Amino acid sequence: MNYNKVWLIITVIFLLLMLLVNVFAPVYLKLYYPNVETVKITGGYIDGVYYGLIVPSSAIISIDNNGYIFQMVYKKSFWIEGTYSILSKVDVAATDSNSSAINAALRSGDTVIVKWNKQLEDGKRVIETR
Image 1 (tube, rainbow, N blue to C red):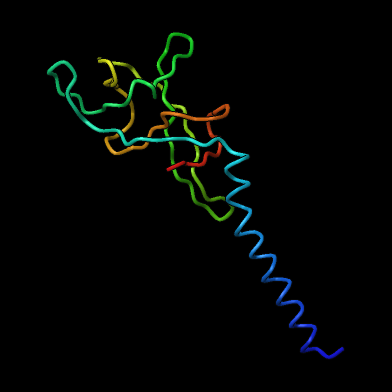
Image 2: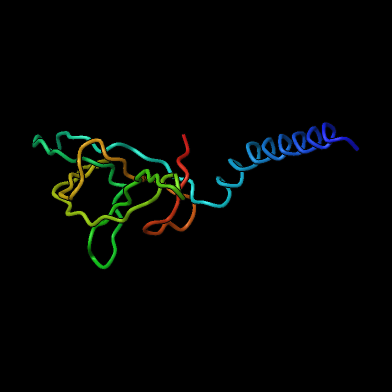
């Protein structure tokens, strides 16, 4: 067997493996990691009062009589890249039927998780559904 055929076979095998990874990796990620729906934190009015941080009431969860939200953050380093959930404590300042004004160490424009399909934990990798 000459070396040209060997390199051709190796190249074809490599290309087939890359195709498999690119086709099946997104499917695997959606099945394995929690799928989440997100919204951006905005400012707005509740009962005629302006608040700088407004989130959907569905984003707030209660743990030991304290309010928390899951924030979605993008992390990139040499080893990892992707979106992760961060559990943040919030104080609810006001609410109406759909929205809640919060006091927290967050900014307008940050992304919060409002729905998820599996157990969500602090620091866990998540996949955003669109």
